[in-house]
Length: 203
Image (cartoon, rainbow, N blue to C red; front, side, top):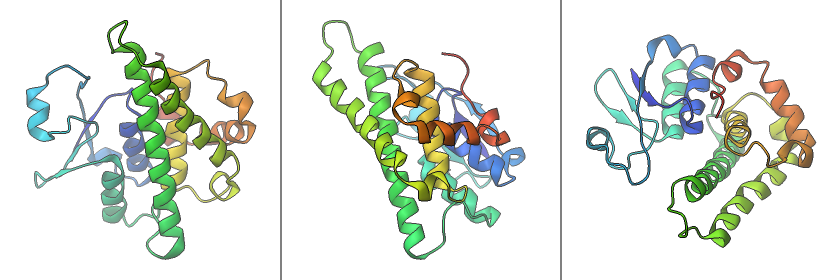
């Protein structure tokens, strides 16, 4: 299998963590890809018109996206437990993940607004609104002991990627001081090889 990725992508990191945890990382070839707003990449657009990372290309040539669907696919073929199979726990995990993915989307848009949009065209209120979505999302998980102390699953993986991306792109945002339970959770997670190995390089 081939996984398109960038070391900076929290979405690709999510899949890498899952693949390591499921014992599949040796079966996945990591294929570096570069995508950026306003920059054409016709070769990658032929793989996915959305031009987003990551994409998994199976041994049969099928294209699987997005990051959650890829994790679900890997979890199924490995017989893993990263996503509960049925019942209330499944829907809670999927809902948690949707929130976390939305938080990452908002953080990425803040990054683009500051670093990519031309000077003089930035919309501060829009950026502040998106950052508030991520920040208040962190506040919600600060008070979710069932996630912070629960089994290692898609919710914990997603939360690791949110906090890691905050460190990577918003190092001065102060999330550790604001959310000490998340800080303790993140420090504990960094003891897992899958999490430590996949930390993005210094920005």
